[in-house]
Image (cartoon, rainbow over all chains, first blue to last red; front, top):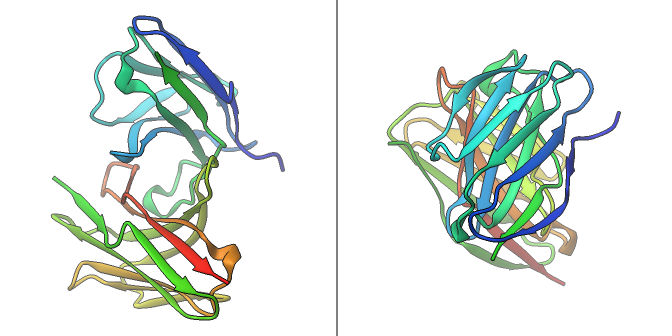
Length: 115
Length: 112
């Protein structure tokens, strides 16, 4: 079974631009969660989608948004990029039906650098 | 707000010794606690899950304990090997939220 894939793997943008990251979950998984990882803040939860609906949202500004398609693939968008948005963005998939006891399967991440 | 602390930003041990990593949390009572391993430039990989009513869980050279009174989990790697060098993250579920809150991680370095 193929793992979680994320594209692109690396991205360089300038302040003020916007960016869209993509995540394809493991086949059959309906939940996709997004995390931001930085050296200073660690792994922080952005949001989670299940069956095309956002179920949970972390404490990030509205510049961070996402969506999920009917095939469970998900995208996240960051508008008006700031230097502090430079981070590794990870997505994780799971079945989405068993709450906190579910294993999260992470993708390799997208490394975003904002100049 | 919920707070998770993983003691020791970095831990250096000799090959063959037991590595013990700590995860402390405050302000809520998770039903589950998970441990993940993350190698540089890669996403975290699930290792073990322990439930609130379980005191201990083992998998090969790994052992996790969960003390809900102390609000603490200990993660042990016995007979450690250089290949065990990585960052280890603990993660707790937030009741009713279907999201994991991760600790900042402990970077383990096993010296040959």
